[in-house]
Length: 477
Length: 96
Image (cartoon, rainbow over all chains, first blue to last red; front, top):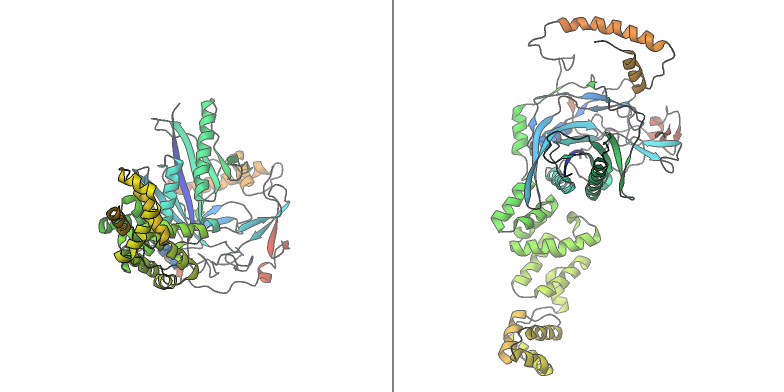
């Protein structure tokens, strides 16, 4: 049977506030265990949590960037469950009146545009971290670090509108880009500041009722999200194909084995017994304040992509790659502002810059070659001072030494030979040394000229102007 | 609303409470008496009355995003029944 895959994603993102959501403890990542804790986030008796105003602002900004409606009246609730990463035995979250609802974001996969609904965005506190001595299964105790307890989180829940693992990845990438553009989260999956759980089910194509879903956890990278969902879709298809039934359960993605495994638990089906948090008072947002935040939203990825296409004539694909991260798009705008021609800037950014950043594992913010410095290099190529080929060598040198393009060209004598007089002698020498290729060219083999151009380039160590070489060779044969 | 013995056992399980033999029956009866009393409220006409989200007439109580000193780790761990290397030490978590 032909099945349709139905996926909904729950994303948790840590907000980049200085202090925690309900107390003044620092949110710094990587501090010594249990040093960023206080009576409030440890859940000691008699304490009173107070909402961090920045968390509300970030939540509203996120809701607006995701095209949500901001609820004028919102409140916190207690979600009750027992796990040692939660010192209070409940998580302060939002249940029936989340801060933002009914939004969407647009993705494009294989040239097809899709709109994915956003059910809700709500504020909550993060839990602590468990450290197991040895493996989880074998250890007879666990160690708890509560530094992360109370770090502000947004939970962003999508509608079950996603139809493939690839779409899930595209949704997550777009969501990450938006969160970074609006500067509310670092979105570092490797540090856990962006986490993703997925609900996935299958149904016969054409059926409108949803099938039984499994919840996937432990998807710790974009690749894991895609691979885990691909695996789980296949697993479910196999179970259904054999006439079996899908059990509603939580499954964990095992990245090293490439499989999902059932997480059996004695806990009954989710029953969190939510009730209103009596220690926190309701939030009533002023519509004028919401409009002020809306006005202050920066240009978002889709708009920026459109602008690059419109303003600079870049292809939709190129503009999409460049605007996928705000830092990349800022670097591009920096190149253009420094005088680089837009298409050359795009090619350099997606070519040499991306290649070097990938190899060194650095984010574009830490690129050793600044946009200003690269723009100078591009202008040297533009003016014909150096060839495009030499420019790559110069870039390499700029990357490692931090010197300017002009200084490197000067020091190493890389200036392109554009003087016909100087070139003629070299061209004649190459013609004399390669009678066979010359004969081939004269016999009508156009390709032979390529070899001869190459020989001239070799003689000049790449400094010859290729157009000039081409013209001179033809003239002298 | 009628509370059944299963409800009581379920809540006890979720709350990690051990109920000795016979207690479930007793609690079921007691809870039914309490819920029966509360049920009187359901007879009140609440048409047009805003649901109560909080008993205090307050809203938007917030603090600025400023870091304040945390507890010294020794104090944070002072009441922990067990600790190791600056961590709280807790019993094994996953079963089976």
